[in-house]
Length: 338
Image (cartoon, rainbow, N blue to C red; front, top):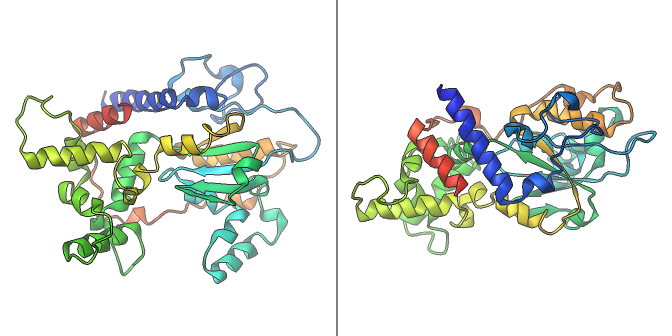
């Protein structure tokens, strides 16, 4: 019963986000007899017509048949934070030039030296958008196709919280991790060494040491019939501003939310083709995209994709990974819908 409620809440949140930003129309989310491939892996005839909950995230990817690789497509990866985009980026040759360290650049390029190891997806990708960084800067204008990474919105926020949480700073493992950067920012603020920096980290994590504290604060003041202190009211305001993407840019991937990426892409470029990679089915969807881009679906998928190497920011080593209570999940779901 609990899993059913959670799934219904997830579908409701995803659908509300798609409605809010007109994604259902913009993502070509239609199922017709002309569709060649669907990201779900099911033949088009087995998919429901309309309604379909999670299947609304299934993007139709039909295209005119032609001989050879479908070279007319040029793709920009829309890497929404905390959706598995780092894994996708590591399969794309274009991201080699985006690495600051020359040694890392060379190692990256060497891994693509043999063209047989480079995927069709990599060959077709001409740029990436992540947060407010678009590289190359004209790639969106030149692109025919926007490839979004999307995730269950509840999971994305939980992942973001643990990624930012200073309690997950392990300087001996990764001194420059986001959690450690947050920790240093808080220490500097408390020692009054960070007069010009953002005060968001010290305020937010001062209110919410755990994800459950954050979820509990996402309640409309007075709606539970309780009387709150000024401090609780202030923390509730911080929680609501943060989840709405209205806090400081230092709040990271909740500031650069779906609405941000919508405005930077589909609001400006209304006629682009849009595909989706779902975090929960990332490799399955990437392989479907790969086969779509190839002229022959029987052609071997590149070793780079078939080995399915996940790249993370160290989440497997987080020591503070509390899960939201049922009430916290419900409040977070409602906050995202609002």
